[in-house]
Image (cartoon, rainbow, N blue to C red; front, side):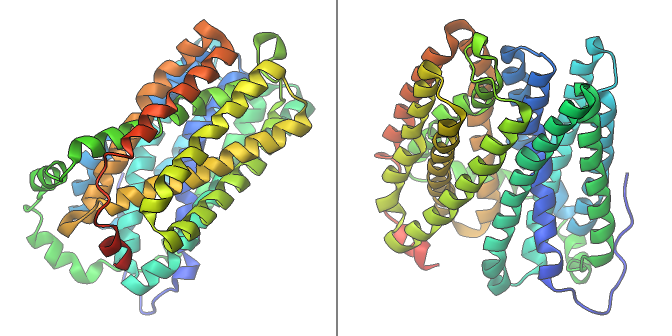
Length: 431
């Protein structure tokens, strides 16, 4: 479906009017597909191995989005692409909400298919939104709004994993009907996307209209092979690839199972949190800690440099995984779960910030945007594959031993830090 949206407008719109909402709309579907899905499948009794495997496999569109990125770049406009994807996401979330009313025997497969379609829509929206951002804002405004867009993306995480999950948990209590509770919750998400679509339809500027002729002239000049060749021709590329794929190996194994562990009954080795409690522990306080860690990480790196900060922040990312070992063995009270999960998420914010800065650090030359897309695609691959097998491993060895394995798997990623090239850091920071 193509939505005709490019109508000339006489007055430019302030970025304050659309940048926050664009990036809120970017974060919300990603979290519903990757994090909230783990919660509602667990609520509905799907086993851990299936949840971890299938909710990891549906990450595939973010792994391969680099391959259709050029199409978004040269066909139609970024504005039209992102509006079409917003409208499609509204329909996708509505279909997901309806799927909860299907018979249990067909719900799981149909809902997964809808989530996979949603993942392709969301990944395409990411490409279009980032491209629109760079076209609509000059370099000075891009630098100014980078913190705003990140904050709004994080707010979408809180809204999705915090408010929506908490809302569903309350509905579960009042209705005693889990499928109906999630149908209402995801129906609300669909309505929010409908509102965002209408809002952006009338407010987004037209930065590409003046460049349309240029786009037509360059339509047959896709330098994709050149881009890929230049990326893999970098000095130290083997170490760089190992770093990208292994740096978050422990986190990739942990991310799906942490949610299942918090929600699982104590008899099954979990902590037995309710959906409502999980929304507060992980989706609200945990995400606030994640945001705080990310902000602090950026400030520290800007002051001391990436080279000095990378290893300490990698330790901050990985050492708190031991908290899950402690919780699995000791089953602490809820009052202690809050700070332990928050500290783990704070360390994750620090470590992920350093990782992101390094991915930008290795993007050089005229293909910086494409290089970053390749790096984030590889990053998504490094999350998808370990996540897909994490549930099977956990079910075979139990939560305590699984979290010990996770802690050990953090070591290879940290070891790669000693081999990756960082000698051009000063030039990168100065730019």
